[in-house]
Amino acid sequence: MSPESSASAAGPVSLGAPNGEANPAPGQQQGRAHFQQQLQELEDHALGGLDLIVEQLDRVLEALNHQDVELAQMVIADDDRVDGRYLEVHQGILSLLALQAPVAGDLRLVAALLHMIKHIERMGDQCVNIAKLIPLSGHEPPVRQEVLEALSKMGAYARSEVVQSKAAFGGRDVGLAEDLVRQDREINRLNREIFRMALDIGDDADTREWAMHMILVARALERIGDNAVDIGEQVAFVVTGLFREFSDSSHPAGVRPDAAPDSRPETF
Image 1 (cartoon, helix red, strand yellow):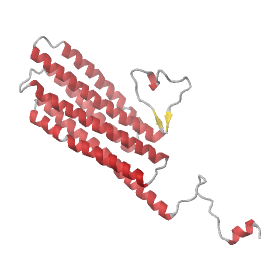
Image 2 (cartoon, helix red, strand yellow; image 1 turned 180 degrees about the vertical axis):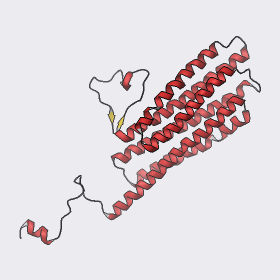
Image 3 (cartoon, helix red, strand yellow; image 1 turned 90 degrees about the vertical axis):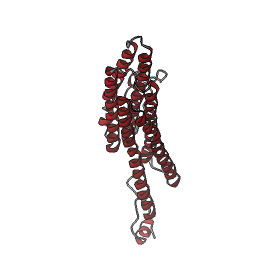
Image 4 (cartoon, one colour; image 1 turned 30 degrees about the vertical axis):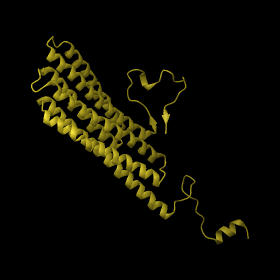
């Protein structure tokens, strides 16, 4: 019997998946579906961490505007929730990787989630840093309203960036992610403005001390904005498989000074 006749007698022959690989068995398909479900749950849990940051930002900015030491202490105590979210997602991803090796697209998402929760944890730490600065100036510090107004604007931009980074990641919207840079430029401008205000604030020792604390507050808000942009960069990585910085103040287009002329963007 010829090979063709033998194949015909044995019934139809599977040609495999379109990419040339064998079609997965039903058990493998079930395992794959379960993996996708768990990965989605971990993503939702990680994105929920950004909601925690928005809550922390709202409270610490209110504490700053009203010099509310008790509210500042609540922000510090509530950082455990942010840290707990980080640990939950991190351990969940490690457990998931131990059960099933993800394919390229899922592996990009896994890597991006690990980056994102680290940025969330850092943003939580910056909120705590602001809260710790509030009681250092005393019960009735010699505040300057123009400085507080500039900090409020910074806080509003930082909050907007956090919310937008969540929407961009959840919607895989690269354009929305890239737009974070626009708001971040405003945060950077206000950061420089507050620094100049502090330098020109006068000779009174208590006022100057308060102004130095506000410089540190501005720096913390600027770092929150930077971390939101970093999350946006992970959106582009998940969608395109290429990692690139949206902006680099030192080297245009994110090119390293030691990069070879024919260097290509990092791929995954």
